[in-house]
Image 1: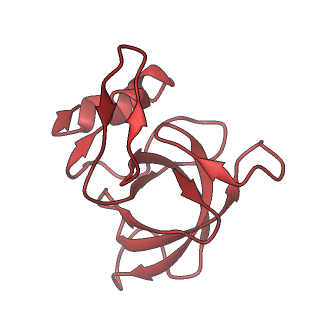
Image 2: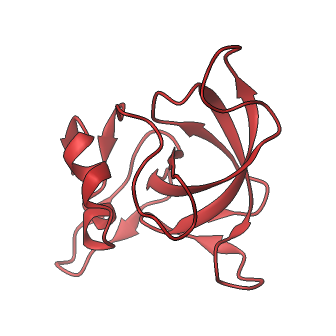
Length: 124
């Protein structure tokens, strides 16, 4: 569960280190997001020569959360950090980077982000 103004680590190689959630894409004033949801972020920290710059507003998908999420089979999934992957834009479900770092929840693939799931090291 991610809420407004949550600081997320960026789990791809676009050059962004941390991002800050400012809203949800196409959801109005909804304030909570879960694994697999698309959100709007602002880059808070980035490397100097990356694809994205500090202060840029972008679209991202949540791939890991610290708050546990119950699955339909009754099990729970929880990670050690909150992380997101930056997308090209709100309509396209492809990532901007070419590599994804760390594990990714399988809810990401179920929500239609197949390219992110195929680039991930592990899917839980």
